Length: 295
Image (tube, rainbow, N blue to C red; front, side, top):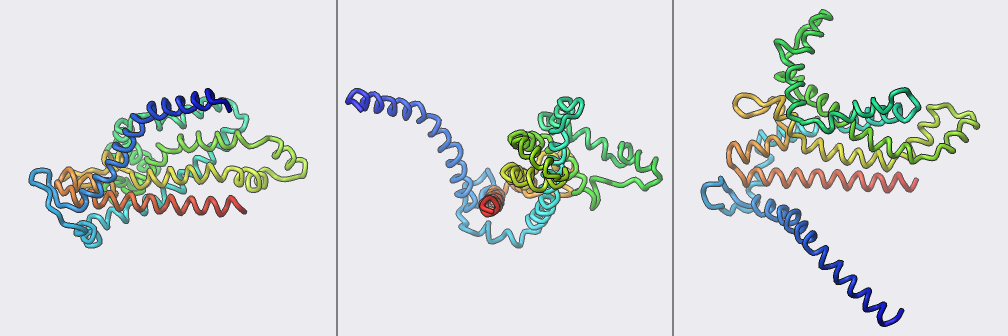
């Protein structure tokens, strides 16, 4: 390469670095800075009114004895155990059906994706009316069928009721991810399998699922992250008069500790634990994907 070419490339790299610097600084301050601030604040006791007081790891050590935190952790774990597989499986099933040449599939795709772009507040209010104990649509149907009306959002059924709403609101996003993966699979593989006499179920197991594993793992990671960050529908559907929730999740408990009780150190410690759990699960998924991908 000539001297002028080397000089031009060096000048180009300088301009690229200059143009990327504001964005990189913004990411560093916005992401890494907020993470550092959260971890630092978790080592203090602060009520937003008095100066922060250093307590070290006391906020973390107190979490196992915090009944509200342990209850929220249990609710979130159960919520995730139901929500993640349900979202992945239902989204995959719908995507497989819509990937076929059925009439009006574009309309069905729009209908299934509509909850993703709809305001959670509006959706939550509609579902509150559906689940209402006295005038709810669901209890009206149950009564019509001869069953006993239930208090869907104020009993042991509350968690499962919230899971239904969250799954309903998330299958559209999963459907789009799986549709993209399905359309990338060569049709020749299915034609060859048909010639060999493979049934549609066998084609699904031996062709679709293996080639769709990256999409399945990706959607599983997204669903897990959302499950542990579930807040909007929980807040709208299950909030009680005293600012609590009939099924508090981790994020709801963090919100309550920080902005209802002004225990910011305790709230940020819970947020750090939540982030650590999500990171650990993501690493587990990543390792499983690498292991299965090599088989």
